[in-house]
Length: 214
Image (tube, rainbow, N blue to C red; front, side, top):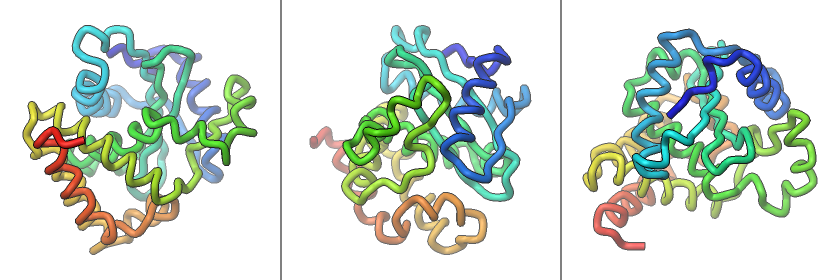
């Protein structure tokens, strides 16, 4: 993976993309230590998705938001199949356990890989992509899209952990934790369904992914 955050113009473009879709959130280039954390948790996800041979072609722009809670975003950031933009809040990067941050990013990337941003309800915003409109970042996806993203994230995380469900089941832990203590998840929960309603489904998705069930 070649993080584009090392190149200021590309980071600036990502910041514009994200800011356009996330009202009230200010993004900046990741600090070296933040970029290292994000690169480490993203690398296994990209390898699971594109294969070890495909990840060198990935261009990932990384940004960070100095917001008070845990949140993350992902979006297409170019014309290539592995041109991605990824952002997270500073508390998510610096305070969440790496595996928890990884599952959070896996879910957001799963929306991109499932092409939910291209749904008919959002079709009118696609024309703004090149001029800096992130047409899906702050949208609340419908329940079917959320379930599809959870299922794809489960498969990606399972593959990233060699077929085991240690990484995938962290998603269930994440949702349980957010349900018990919402204080640090208010912004993320504002665009996602109630997490306690998703735990059982994600456990089933993890077990299905581990067994190879479609």
